[in-house]
Length: 140
Image (cartoon, rainbow, N blue to C red; front, side):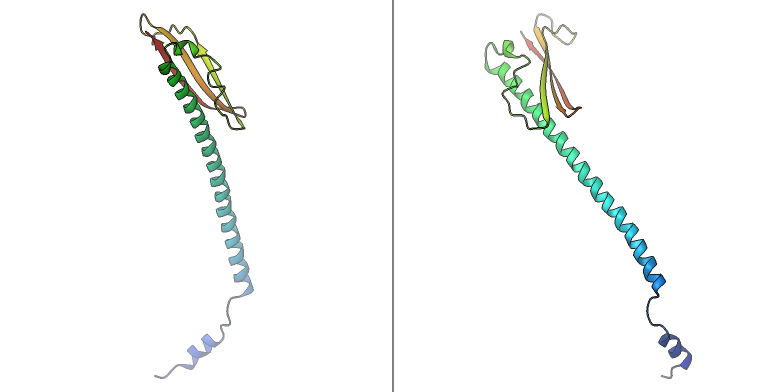
């Protein structure tokens, strides 16, 4: 096979990448890296927010279950339900748990002839209300 001397000469002149090509490649890769790293930062922040919401939901659920268990367990359990019923339960730092009780509740959801209480379990982190669980309890 015979090679043309023009083709061999053209390949022999190429030495690699020019400095300008390398600088442009580094700049493009740097911009892409900044965009990708900012997405990782946003993902970490979103995970922290989701963890706080999950913790608040678990705190609210544990208090709600405690209220319902107190009502079922004791004959006089309905009268034990007040704003301090969940004070003995553990609350992690950064969260505040409060219970509001409307007694007697006389709204349309209360069955006729029954005594009713409306209970709200509220979990706050900082200044944001994370969870508000309403319960309507009745005693026949």
